[in-house]
Amino acid sequence: MERSLRAARVATYVYFVLCGTLMGTWVVHIPAIEERVGISHAALGGLLVVLGVGAFAGMQVAGPLTDRLGTRTVVPAGGVLCGATLLLPGLAHDPWTLAAALLVFGFCNGCLDVSMNAHAVHVEKAYGRPVMSGFHATFSVGGVLAAVAGAGAASAHLPTVATMAAVGALGIVIALLSARDLLPAAPAAGQPGLQAETVERRGTPGRVWLLAVLALMVMLCEGAANDWSALHLKDVMGAPAGTAAFAYGTFAAAMTVGRLLADRLVTRFGSVAILRHGATLAAVGITLVTLGPWMWAVFTGWALFGLGLSGCIPQLFSAAGHADPAAAGANVSRVAGLGYVGMLAGPAVIGWLTRLVELNQAFVLLTLLCVTTAVGAGVLRTDPVVVRRGERVAADGTREQEMAGNTP
Image (cartoon, rainbow, N blue to C red; front, side):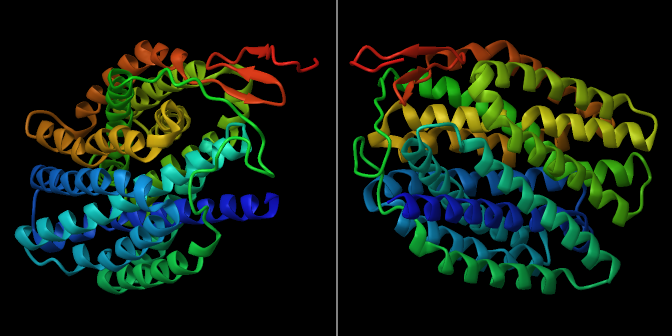
């Protein structure tokens, strides 16, 4: 069982990398697709609403379906569909076909995203310690890979369609090959080979929606970096296309580093501290992007923004999944669904704001959202506790010895 659990963890890493790469491939090709279709920043912002609607719908379908059919069925299906539909935005030739392509791609991406996060909750429960941030780190690895590939393809003057088709086809193969190592269902407490655990089901529907609202704000900020960082460097700072692609790469790399460290920090300081201080650091970073007059200052700002946001979403997803283990998929779909409305549709607000102010000035909204998130971080104090090796690890990082005959 320990070997199969390790294999399931590795497979989860693979799917997170895959999802990050597929979404990142779309992100880094936004400037080229925007230019070919012939739309403005504001029009692009409106089209991103369609992507968000599709993702939200996919998550609401995949969440309950994952609880019913199991992650071993839904996760690879989502990966195959997401890889197959990546090509569609590259084939679009006008705003209407681009809107249809983004709706379909968004739906498939939502299916993959919520099902792999539900599987990550099951793996975390089986391990009995925080591992969620590590999974999200590999999503950021996918974003870095997509940024590097996109910059290389742009420098080599490769067609956008060819690049997206190649990445999508590779994604289909990876999704199919990794399916066999997934857990067939949520691991039960006390199952042989797994660490025993108990979970206090203190989560209520109202609390889950509070987590969802925080996720919306955090992921709106993340979506703004995804969709506008390259355009910011190109249009505001005057950077060439190859250099502009690395704005998103800098943000994604910082997210990766932060998430690689976050699980250890959660164990030591608790999820509340990670969410509160992370959102505060993100506010500082995006303010530097807004005000920074030099290229190095802007890159530094995107790095701080990514580092600050890196640990926030994993804590919110983990709290939603552990609130009720029997409905992990449904609860994650609620938090992830509303969050991804922010990530994929929220950047439309930035686009609309560019009608009134400059792009960098529109980023002030992100500063306000980060500050609000930091203030509301206390909702994580009611996280369900996880019992491992006779200890109770609470959301604030404190540990209490269980009173069930365990020795210190």
